[in-house]
Amino acid sequence: MILQTLLGGLVQGCIYSLIALGFVLIYRATRQINFAQGDLLMLGAYLGMELQLWGVPWSGALLLSLLLLFLCGSLLQLGLLSSLPRENPISVILLTLGLGFVLRSLATMIWGPAPLSFPNPYAQQLFVWQVLVISGAQLGVLMGSLIAWLALWELLYRSRIGLGLRALAQDHWIAQASGVSRKRMEALVWGLSATLAALGGILLAPLSLVHPELGWLSIKAFAAAVLFGFGNVTGAVFGGLLLGITEQLSAAWLPDVSRDLVSYLILLFWLWLRGSHRIGSATFVLPGKS
Image (cartoon, rainbow, N blue to C red; front, top):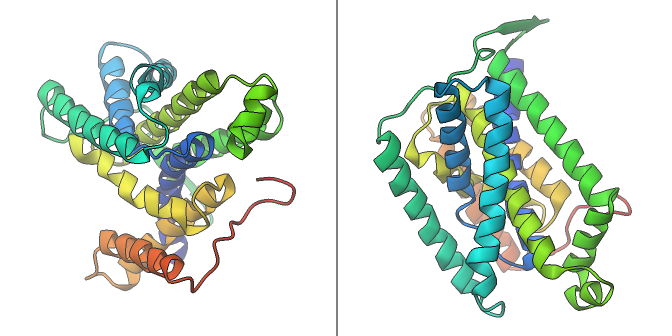
């Protein structure tokens, strides 16, 4: 029973970590926060569903959805956000909050408010290992998240693009003087963030129903992003996993307590600790990495 609960928490935590990584990538490179991140997850799930209804195979729908959301995120930065004053982060917060409401309204107009099932040929397959029963959808979340984490790690720490992104995060003036295009890098980061959100939506959809309010998961993912220091890539992954496991354990041991309540209490308690200086502002990173 406990292992099955931990598995459920691990799966949920993977989704949180994908959304949290999007928050962190944007913040590291631009010092901005994208509060439409969850709504991009919702949009990715709807696009994946719609493409399959048009006859596109599941794998093709996945790749097309990721590509479309990458373009969406990049164009959002190039078309709207680049014109906003950099010294006023509140304008970005307000714009992305408004964008989230627009996306939810459009999703309601196009697909309706009722939850819809997501077609996935592998979702109902069951794999038994020892005392664990793993569904195809759960296995997809675990494998898809692992591949995304490894690919992002390779991009950030073993490529010239990653070197440019990290230089931009450290000091954008020096990075630009060294030939790094701030505009291109920021568009890339917003595109990657949207891609991670879309991946999270498509992986989550077979386990849940697709509906316009799916994007509210981003509040929990934001909590995961701040647990080990906002702006820390490694911390976003571990924060998401920790939050997902904590939610599932609390639901199993405290059935009368809402899992959402647990997540919000963790966020509020942590912010209170940080604000009252009871803990430091240090972040947890891998040795030699930032």
